[in-house]
Length: 346
Image (cartoon, rainbow, N blue to C red; front, top):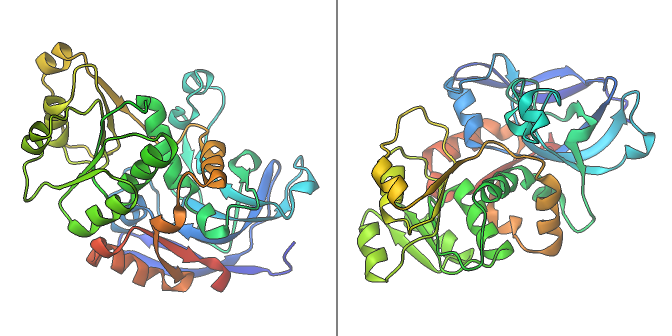
């Protein structure tokens, strides 16, 4: 247990106003553990919070929902034996009592709270969370990899919604950070072939190829539908990780009959949907939010070496350089995949 009284954290006070703040080290209450944060990942939603266009956050807020570290204190009701345990923290806080929770879908709890959005997050040297959110890590999963369990859990949740078969012909729109978690899971965990990735940026397509994509298509230079038709390919599984409202209409058009389409976006702009195409092909459209108890599954993927977090992580910044990290993500996104903050150097 630390003898420190204060800690450093990343505070977004208001839109476009972020600073390193000094706060008292929190004490875990009943049923909580305190995590000494080692590494935390920057998500696109953190950028949205910073710019003030996240629909659920209230300011001021200590942000950050992708993080891992070591339990250094516990509240009443939590075994002392958990102190010293290395953990990755899932950000989903559910009520356990609403209709969604009783149906086994706590990630869409009617009273959902997300760490780093509704409550103080993990961009801090210390963070207190309910014990159940702290998932133990095996020795084979290093600290940096542990901070990527959350983004990989987004892919795991999406693919659990769509289902995956080794016989699928899979198409992933978007080779940004979330698209890359899907690519790694489809290839490394599920062995899908062919695996096709479409994007507008060659650097991202190069990363997708190195992660196992069998075909990459720059849609700025090559029409996607014509390319697929020329190769005789009709995707049976399509994942939209680019999140543009026009993609769904095209995805339905190029999908094979009985295909599944997974949507990972959170935008409010409507997409065009043709009921004729949807019903003629009997397509399934799946939405996905956060993760539904997927952390143990992803941690096992990492332990077995089925996914490669080191390939996913492009940059690591000391936590006090958070503004520099945000600026890089916004000004040179092609250079970035997952960017981590190192709180051991805070």
